[in-house]
Length: 89
Image 1 (cartoon, rainbow, N blue to C red):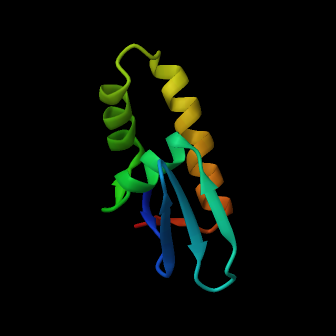
Image 2 (image 1 turned 30 degrees about the horizontal axis):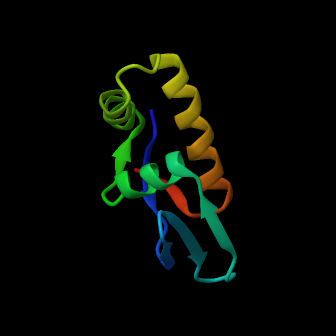
């Protein structure tokens, strides 16, 4: 399983209960939904997929594990596509 970390040069702008990320190079602005925002915060330190699944499983114990895994994969893909996070060694 992959390990992920935040890309350097991403600026955070919290607005009330929401979080926007601004890519340093392009200036693109990304609005994070609640899951992506939680994932961004969880990646303050690099983390592997297994570690993230355990973390989100504990945070949402009534949600089926396969739903958490699917949603987490979607959020990771969104953050990767936006070049907000990267795979680390």
